Length: 135
Image 1 (tube, one colour):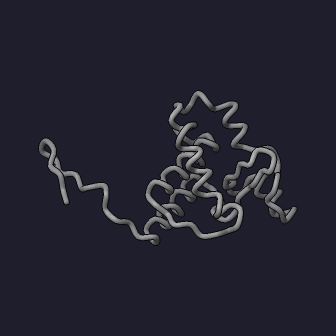
Image 2 (cartoon, helix red, strand yellow):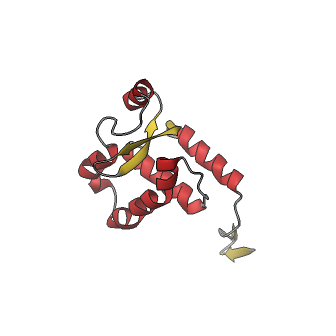
């Protein structure tokens, strides 16, 4: 289905996506922003989790200790305290809680999740925000 608007054609954005296509898009996003797609850091005190940057001190500490719990300080808490001006209220009220809800099973249990275009986009947005790569 196509919609025509003032001399240009736009494809309908509601087309179905396969899980393989979404996984490829997710992997490309991780590669572009240099995130290790296999390692999550989980912090018990604040209950935050996120993927770590490739070749970072945090990644090295996880590999040396063999545990991904409470490694270093929480980058999500640090970003919320120092980079809050970069994002609007909608990000903190909707996007960040959605990210934490959607990806928690994968981070805590390693359980595969059903990807959606929205999930891939918010993961990319949150991880770029944590790593100061939004601009």
